[in-house]
Length: 218
Length: 218
DNA sequence: GGTTAACATGAGCCGGACTCATACCACTCG
DNA sequence: CGAGTGGTATGAGTCCGGCTCATGTTAACC
Image (cartoon, rainbow over all chains, first blue to last red; front, side, top):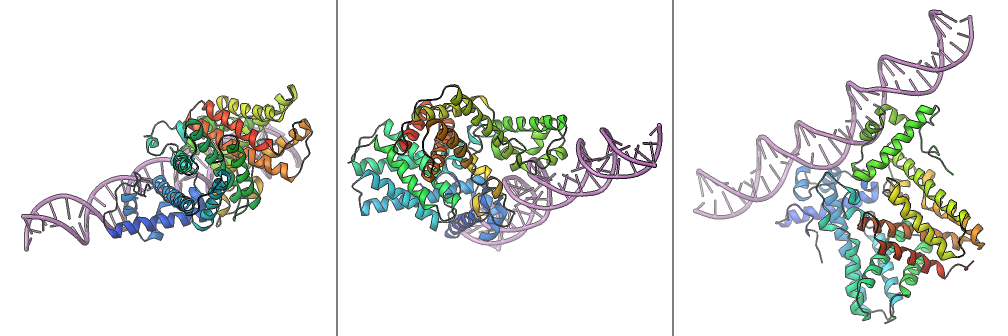
């Protein structure tokens, strides 16, 4: 699993104290994201709450985006970790069960993990302002199309679990499914802070129907 | 159709000159969005390019978000206008044709209209940072869940065109379909500036399969 | 104990969002 | 035709947030 230092940190924390500080900054970032959102989040406030001077903050994070990106990656790993854990604990017999499970885990994450789902993996993790950025250095390469990572890891699990054949079609379908599900789930939580159950159900349906034509039933 | 002044402007332009200025500001906003993205867009630069002093800018737009929101609404109206025009010119005989047509129009808009699709209707048009905003006045009510507007208008067209029965299930399905399609299409344009054709095709498939179970075939 | 390199700190710089005191203008009325 | 009046236009200036860098502090090694 990619950990927090996976290319997003300026300096990898060497001492235990530094590592704790980084964690605290990420924690406070998450809480602030829930409280005020991405735009209103300030690095000063994150540093203040984490009890870290602003200078030290910038020793570890090159900028505000890097902070949020690091948090997103941490959350992503937690999310995938939970899915993998549940899959190996009780392997589903069915495709539909498997995707339902993924949706349920997303919902559980959203309810318990501060800052989860506030930032759009696809948007924020790729370059600021999308691919149209010109004058500044592109920070793409590192994180371009990060939802593809979700799809990638899911694919590995999926191919292994269900014994389905891999292929470009499957890959694309998974990326699309993840992107669509992500959007609908975000809508569900925008509509209702605890997640509109109807929309969550509809999300499951969407993924099922989309994938139904494409995949074997194990 | 909601025009630009539909609740998003501080002051409605009375004279012709003012109206032109507002249009120019929106045009420049659109081009800047394509060039540098939302974050790097500055109100000063928009005003400068539009040949309008910054003070005047703020006479019409309460803040940066309001500007982008107004642009999004203008684009949305253009988009829906095109769909309605094509629908009445050559009514499709089929559900699938109709949704394909909507996707094609989205792609055409994206290719010809600066700034289209850069801002997420759902995200930017609702409150900054989602529903979790606390300290500041909420600007929800006006624009909460704007993708619902797309769905709404589509629904009207759809029910009329296809003679299908309206209902809460249909409404929800349309909102979900729009949200999902929007996300996948954005992915298509992030992957390739001119829109990845495979992903565009996959988007059509997604909507077809999702709606197939729900709707009559005319 | 002394030398050196890594790390920590926060005052301050730069620039962007947004305001407000002032100037300008169109129009009315005596 | 000039004074009055209410809306409109303007841009210098305020405030604040992202980010830096000169300086102070600690750790490590000889």
